[in-house]
Image (cartoon, rainbow, N blue to C red; front, side, top):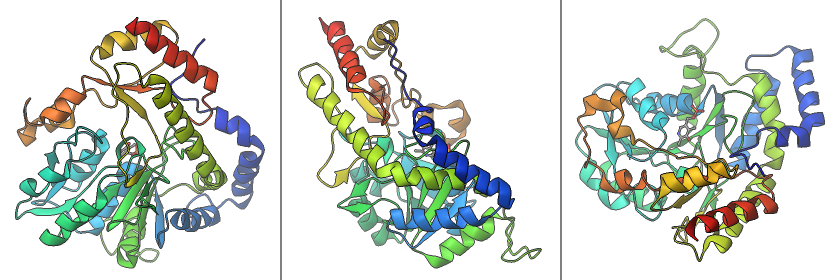
Length: 366
Ligand SMILES: *Cc1c(COP(=O)(O)O)cnc(C)c1O
């Protein structure tokens, strides 16, 4: 049996008719840039996130960058974010000219350790970017309280967490703004790159709209130096079709996660932990084990694809050497990256496949 890590064609097979129709309608209208389907999708995605505004952009990284620019974060400023996240969170900060300041993670949730945030704040700090890693919301109220005390903006990196809930509310409008990614393997994936800025702040939404489109509030008037960071109408048309299925896909992910947890409970693995405030959408199902590399090879030999998200922490990446961090800077993150293993997870994953993965893990421990 072969169990892939993700299956990006299953959703296409399920929706082929509707997707074809959506694509053809854009081809026939010819409104490829900032077209009608983009406007519709933005309104629908904002509503989905229980937010007022959504601005389609070219990627999740671009969304983070435009939010920071919209908040006037730039050279000389510092932005706090967890050491354990995808590299793009930090790249969006450095692209604005600001400096990323990392904070270690909570060993149970793998999200930013709120008890260590305050110690990282300086007179140059402008914003905090909590990441809802693996689809699980960060401890937002604690982070928002710290930010209020110090006059900082909170920007959610929700690139892995479309539809996740924090104390019953969708992620996306819990802070100043949120960034989403539609990279194909994300919980809501395009047929290429895409992203979204979500916010309740009208001014920030306007800034993002202007910045994504060469900095022009109206044609040929360039108010500020902007970018070419728009979401294609074609991608928006496809994403509209897929958005209608998102909640049922998220339920399937949660069901698979519960199944994994039930069957793995008696094995020497640390399972994902959901705090009471969090309703995770399991973008990734990540376990923690001692002999991670050996287990990974064992599963690979059984035809099971797994992943490591992420093997090298950002503060130890060559690209971020100039920040002056070293081994030992963030011990929880550094230990975790040697133990984490992401198991196959996607809505169409079958019960048989989950059973096979679990039995193969059990065999490893016999
Ligand atoms: C995917 C991802 C991003 C970047 O999104 P892209 O669309 O690939 O630019 C940023 N942060 C996190 C946590 C991500 O998982």
